[in-house]
Image (cartoon, rainbow, N blue to C red):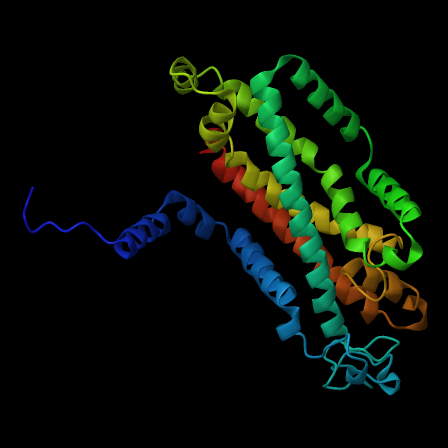
Length: 317
């Protein structure tokens, strides 16, 4: 070895890995799919605008001094009667609709991200346990998953929400609205992760590296979560991306039906529900713009999920 050879620093190694990633087939196929690029850019814009709504929103909607009833029911700025202060118009309380949408998007995204994360963790753990241990454990977990899949998501979410609200005192229901929705979506979303991870775990547990770990005295938990789990996580990104769009739609549906977020914590579904009450009086913008954001956000995640599924499927390469 040459005496002048110097081990690369962590920063240099990071630059090398980044350069390799940018030159990879994954990035090449990403740029080749124009609709995927558009969906990704739009999803990132909405994620940043929604998650940082306290900075991106023109007005603080929770501050009563920021809106005036005299500004109520104003149409979008480009229409007759509109004002430049309210780009997308205002609601019946005189609140800026764009600010309402960004704050609503914030709540919808937070509920979706937390729900998907919890569903992913729960489903992955149960899937690995079911696939590796087999027998009675596998039967119990999978039959419970089958039973859950036979119940419509919205119906079960309504049931969980109704039971939780019935058990909680009225003064704490608004405060617990978000945890209740997260619990509802989590309990209806873990099954797909569990079934997918179980199938992959069954394939992996008979491979040589697992058998070698067993022979060397490795414990079951060590084998499951140190050896098998890292090798079965590739489909998770696809499932999580698709599930995120579904979770946001589920939250919006529950809020639209009046069992989701309360009016003082508006999500996109709450805004659509409130705007729907005034739709026939001519305030179409209060319904249309939140609905467009909701649909395009969910569509973007679905497009990204479908693209990831195609890219990560070796049979389609």
